[in-house]
Length: 103
Image 1: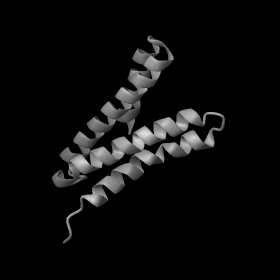
Image 2: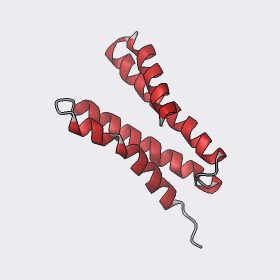
Image 3: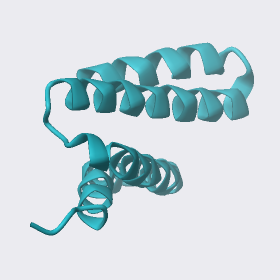
Image 4: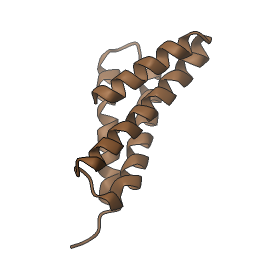
């Protein structure tokens, strides 16, 4: 999670130089890059199976995209953006569950 936060922060700082649209694009690129780094580490440490890597990555990315759009549109309250953070993990779990092989 720290790697994802770092990548998102770097993306937002670089994107901020290009205005509000650049900031949003920077956050998206940085966040998705962070998800990719975390997924590679999770696979390397055998926290997820290699067969579930792609579906988990897709689920986490979709969760991040939904969370980012929802959080940006609900900045008037601090509760919704904070709860949106869990959408990345929920998306990863759902993606992994969908591709699960029955035993």
